[in-house]
Length: 470
Image (cartoon, rainbow, N blue to C red):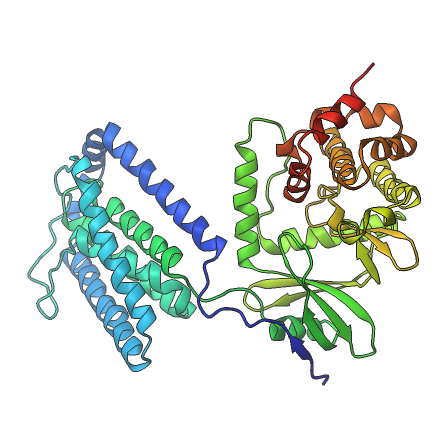
């Protein structure tokens, strides 16, 4: 078996990830929505639920008693056992996170609970004499909030079986509270307060890094028949992934990009930001999973190359722990256009780039990220298009026009308006290039292009004026 030399920065033990921010945002939205419903129609909903569930008082006493005891036993196992594991393992940071989250959950509940006054009557009669170690049979809402917060804060640090046990405890305790307390919004509000506090604690204090390590990437590629002799983290502009340069056992050079949960969450947040933009950006719905998104990139790259577009050959698709995926492409000996001197970006180079984009356009493939970093000039003088991570097949007219606008704007920052437009006209013609006019606005361009345009604020206006009819 080939032993891989890994040259990469070790992931931080504690990191702040986009996925954690996304979870905290979702928790906060859920809490605010529930509070709003409770404030507007909470009393009516509680009364209706109490009448609807009135028949639950016929449940046999042994059933409710068993549920109460199950919650108490599970609480002792999860909370007591978890505390023992933390202390024996000297995991003080985890203990701090859990304590801070629990206190935060109780405090948040104390702040929001006075906003609601919706309790109705009880629907069952739980025998409160059944207790274990003098524990109250019916958990209070403060306990619910603290437990939910502690489970949320501990989740990134513990194994899946502990996470499942923790959330099972939350559900059981919430159900016991529902059966033994007056019907109202207290239980869901307590759980949501705990979720928000726990998620906020993870964002504030950090959690274990979930990016695939170099070792995991090498192991994943070896498992699909591409063993590496060397893997080195790359210092290149790669949006939405972690890039590497690899060398196979037989000496071939690869460009490797790894994607994990963090990149998936960052992409979802970016799509949400674009969704609220006042202009139509032409975005499609996000894929259901990271795997589907990475498979789509591989599909578009294969399709583009098969149609004759000059883009690197896909060598491998692999998994990488934890929950990550890897794409490996043949590496190109050369430099991206954003790293070239102005005099190196000749009319011949621009003509080659526009020729590749025209071919993509002819087959309705939208690249959707035609910034200079994704156009390579190989050492032999050939221009290549790379990175189909945001691309679409059978693309709409809006996306195809946005591609033209992005290439025009990005190339203008290097060669000026006149040369950029002239090369575009020669490749796609005035009618097609004119469709880019409405897309030449900062929200529709990549961040890298917007940053480059800031150095010459009048450039975008001059480009629009050059394309305007008449």
